[in-house]
Image 1: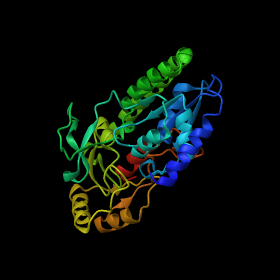
Image 2: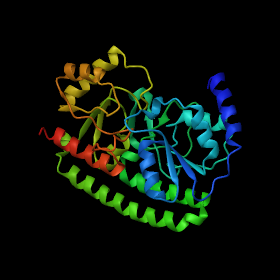
Image 3: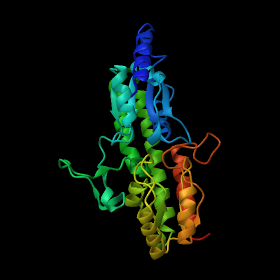
Image 4: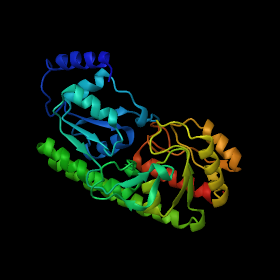
Length: 317
């Protein structure tokens, strides 16, 4: 964080200390990005305000926090994150803000997938991380846990319990909202399984511009053939050698299409698709919701849209 940002953080935090302490009517839960924000809103309902830093159609990997974000963190009743290295910028601004707000890491009860950079940034076939990472291990953890609806059910339970600890007077509300939402998530998971069953097994193969579907593939029986970028969109573009290897993998697997994201620049994908002789499917919602009038306006909507789009594209319709 730059010296200028640190100055404004300090200035605004001092300014914020003059404001009244949060009450039941002005409590705020700060959330890192849009997908998680929608999940948290379903848990809190009208009990408190939810402030989301990274909004719809925006890349949380590349977000640059503002001094106002530091003030929001300092004044928050609670902060909800994904964890697993997804929001390193949030860790930094939280520390600089001097906030004492409790942080709820929504992925805390999940078993993360390891990603092996040496294998092209793809989630390994074994799936789960070891209990403890070995010192010097070059592997990283895949943070895109929300693409498995069962993971989100566990996340809701973690968020619910963390918010009850922060606001015990709202415990009944959080429990009721969570029970309703979990039922909706269970229905979503069953719908996805049914839709995927209609896709021939040999066609359940994904090529994407960003390695975000490891958990989706593991839960719903897909194979990630390749990705142009790794688990983060902030890395360098792939080398010519890597592009050649990906193109060869696409041809060998007979994948009919490549999937892009609602927040991505598709120029590199266009080149890969041309070289491999495949089409580009309509954009999926991956690391961000869409606008309120889009097919990806909520988590439930984005997941249904994504699977419907995959089904259509992979069946060649």
